[in-house]
Length: 195
Image (cartoon, rainbow, N blue to C red):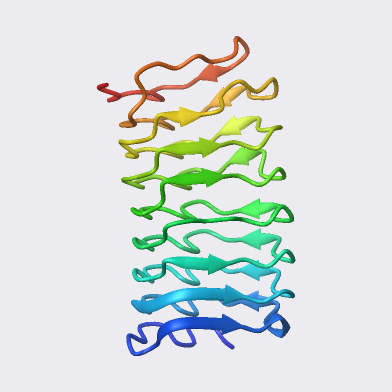
């Protein structure tokens, strides 16, 4: 399968299963396939390239393989019906904007190997309420959770956490935040938290 192989294919619907022999889901392969509701990625798939499932707005469920190690930027951005994400522990690389504007997500847990939260990774997720960071997290990227107005729960109490970048939690739902002493908070991190 090549880049943008079936993009804009609105007739592609239901649940699709990709074989493990594929190894890599190409760039933009299913971009804007707005009727896909479920996705099964078989064992053997190792990488999801950028924009692979961006704007697949009907996807509710995804089954990720344990073999997945890399998810590039915008992989599932604007998947507005996506309700749950269970990433495999073998995932070692997560791109910026990977789950941007996924409005139906309520909770998200980072795999242990993702110790630096990417920029904009979950920004604009209107119903996101809780996030579990990996135990060895060191940095939270800029705008990582910006415009997640219901977000009120993040496990900040990590000995390894040292930096929260610009606007990481701008316009979130926090009423109070207790950070470890060693954490450097950059500009706008908790701006517009009006609760």
